[in-house]
Image 1 (cartoon, rainbow, N blue to C red):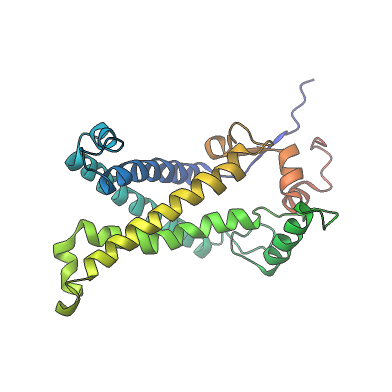
Image 2: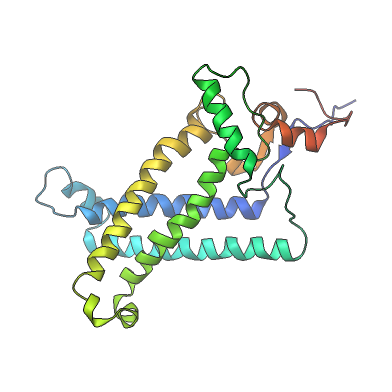
Length: 243
């Protein structure tokens, strides 16, 4: 007889995965073309080849703005999708599954840090999302408010200029460019160091977690990384393998 007991848990549905793939692709395009546009001078030995790789400043600019608009649409789609699920009751607030920060995230962060420096004996028990994953998620909202809005204004300067008083004309565009550029640098640095390590490069996931593609997580990994969610979903069910 075939053993049909599950060994994996479906963590994300297809819609969430498509939204995430669009976010990943547009983010990478924005990061690569953004740096080429920030340093486009072909006379500079170490940056000229990068802007030429994207077809020159004009083509790189088109790619950059197109990717930015697609990312904004993807973000709006995600927000509307969440609101729809909340209104219809398909998604409900539960401290064990919510992406919303709760007080236990603070105590978990402190306990985790104490554990890593040897002052704590046990690791905290995380629910569906740990505090780092929640920070990753809500950072997108922060980024869309700063990078997305400033980028949208810089993409359509003529239309946006009607919202700015005449006395700000000498400095507002430089401020917007600085906000857009520096916040993008912060986002790129954080994603490259923190997000890629936490979700893909650490030993348990190396060389890459496939959850963002398949939406599934092994029960063993779930029990180790998200024990509270594991207990909520599978505690007392005899048909589930004990990882």
